[in-house]
Length: 300
Image 1 (cartoon, helix red, strand yellow):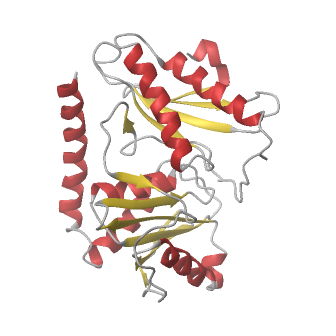
Image 2: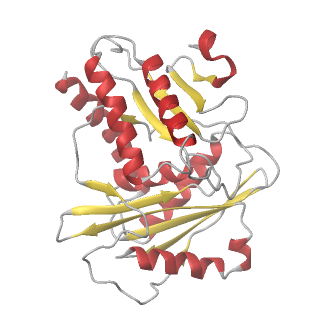
């Protein structure tokens, strides 16, 4: 793959077989770009699919689901064969088709200071069975009664590392309108508004439909929103929103920045009794990895 894609291909962890490839509609003048992260299990390609994640600030909702379904169909049609090349070219075809449409390119508000994207817990399994979790944007209407009141907002203890500071903010939410209200309230604070990134994720449980309404935002810190949402899924929290502000201090932190973002979020979720103790939460993370792996083996 490195010989085929050159600088687009990046080895994140050779021993763990974790790789990343940046895919664009046009190499010379890219309009749409997506980062595909993959981890190759020992059973790949014989009996197990790659574990993967799609990273792009514009890729959300149904568009993300459609692309994921396309990749999983390719795997099913080619079980036992190497499929990374097919996946990359399928994604490139989607990006080319998107660039040929009349819609403008993505509106990227901020660009992360650190383009390297580490790939750990938040990789998703290819071909996992349909669950009852839906990712929806703010403009999606819902049957749940809208709550107009601004929920209380709590602020966590900041973490500082090499002049970068991370701080989590938490609010109980039961509808997307409250999510927007919380964000608006936080941005009234000049310090928070001046943060390099304000990454957030939320999960709202819809009792009538027995589903989760959830979404996330990187705010320029590539893949951070998805990692934060994944943490909240593993901890099985509901009706809550977490925002993590990062003030960049001029020193690149590499993958440590993701550790600090998730630690800030986990600490405030534990403090406000949305989940267990930090020790139990760590066990849940490890258990989740094992369950997903065992489940995938049983399916093949």
